[in-house]
Image 1 (cartoon, rainbow, N blue to C red):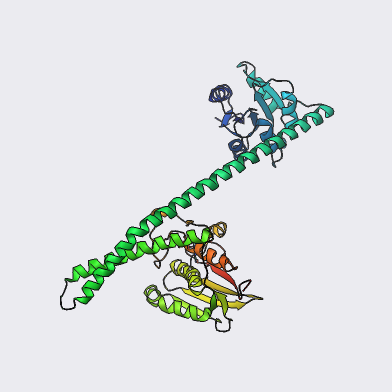
Image 2: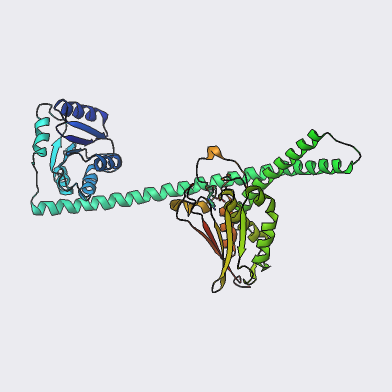
Length: 414
Ligand code: ADP
């Protein structure tokens, strides 16, 4: 059966919802329900109802605010919006009409007359205020909106403060756990070292191959845990501003050549090629070579991880006024534009973490989401800047990503 019309009822009380729905449906209307302002506005925009029944006291926005919002949306200038409320305090009808309602019905509704009332609004009935009354109530409506806005800003500020506090608690917890793990891990590393040394010393003994393989596996595992924990501690130092730089002259061309040489095995295993272009002409920059190595290394590692086998990575340098712009471009999957700022936030990784693997080189291998925050922290400690350009992410067309690392040639006050 074709409905006589679609009616959206914005109301948070289930009892009222049920009653109105039952009455109107028995008269052939299709009734949509929303129990809040935001969901109501969304439903209205999506379903384009023929009439909207609006409760006034709602949990998020009040009915007057929702009406004003809808009246400002294209396509809702003429749709009848009728207040349906138990609030019959003086002025509530006038304020509802001033806010943009076309009618004002009060609860409890009468089963006998309600459908006729609804039909009359559908057929064009409009209640209007005199000009003077309208201005007066519009002013009050505007004041109420501003007051509510002010209150909401306070609420948001308090919620933000709470979030910052939770963030601090989370960061402290992570750092504390990392430090706690560091102690037993140092012991483990020590024993691994002793064990390896012991086996190497006893060249005359031929140990079973399986035993040596087990030992090798154990060693790799311990190294990996150690690397993860060091990363966390490193990022927390950067975040707390306690990272100390040991400044000296840094030649980026040599640093990059050594880095690529050290990655040779990984690159060949993945069939990747890193092209170093126009780095020789760059001047020495002032910086902490080992920290900068970590920062640039993290960006290169990502380029490796997010470029499929056989791809290319280009590293070039441009001399700017007082800085060097090191540009690392890959031919990988790219990064969604909406994520391009957030990837520099700690622990921000894209995609489902269910498929997480902490591989430094496997295609799309995951990590802790600390590589780029670490790079940003180190570069900012050098008074530089890091950003990414990418047209978006596409696993099949692979638009690639281009990271810019802008590093001042000289550090201030030195
Ligand atoms: P991780 O240390 O886990 O690799 P990062 O902080 O280095 O984390 O990077 C955060 C996220 O940014 C990665 O999980 C990845 O989704 C995205 N990303 C970083 N670099 C690239 C890149 N070159 N290409 C595509 N995505 C990238």
